[in-house]
Image 1 (cartoon, rainbow, N blue to C red):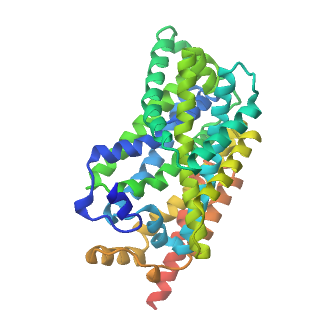
Image 2 (cartoon, rainbow, N blue to C red):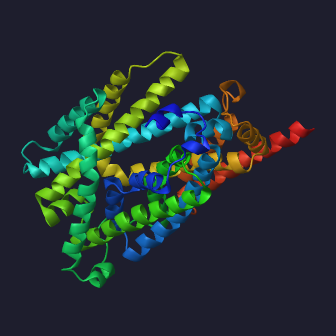
Length: 428
């Protein structure tokens, strides 16, 4: 823990790197949670099984390439993602904007997960309190737990992960042992039809933030093979195991509602797993979002933000999103993430591997074993920001192709082109 606190924004030296298993489990934890199960249930209810797994495979290839690229940069430089963003095109203010985008997305995830929590609680109480009251109480309750640092949340987290995995495993064996898998696979999806291109974008929306946060973990990795193995492990565990089981179960039970899936298969234990899992995930969502906003406030104003106040405000906003029905717009929410975040990752990858000015700076820093200084970091990278906006707009308005890939490629090409022209004129 001391190492994590010591190297928050500075380079992690080789002697402080960690074992492969430690970082692999932390990284895989980002995609082996209830949100991935929700995503798989949505895919299974809206697509044929063949199309769903085709979409997962294509999205996993893109996610894997981006995750390995950023993870490799984090490992080689020993720097967190926010510092890499400063030097990979965004500058100091630009990296703050990236932090804001991440914080806002986590706010949305808080609303989604709180709605699931409320639905599970309401189901367990036979609908007596109603969804609205359940969502309001659960959101406010968790907000104040996180705001005032209740230690019980750590106990909840330690229970949630094994309980969730145990319940999912039990449900899978219990249901699939009594069902014909071929019949379920060949049945017609009952949900709103989802095309493969849109599904790829939605899957990217469910995992792309994990790619952006990967350098924060891999900066403690010892070598590139660890980064590659970690990436493959996360994809297999999150995309194929959790998503795959959810796809199959949603087809068999003919629903995308994870509360229904859990309740019908295991009753109270399943609902308990839903409650604990949403507590665990929303604890992290609210905590990370609050830290991001607090850091942004401090950078922009030069004043120390009040963490408790910010946490309460963000928690209440997330609770309001639950009440406004963000869970019913889950697919749209993921689609938005799948269009907005790939350009950010694309610009960072291009900025690190393809922009000569940046590669030279990083080589000098590695040689001197130093971290980038604020005085040497650009204030704001307009080229990177405009490239991200261009890519996001292209992914939104262009009806041809795959939205997430469109935004990814256009942002990367736009940023590389601008930097190429700048470098050309600098040499003259």
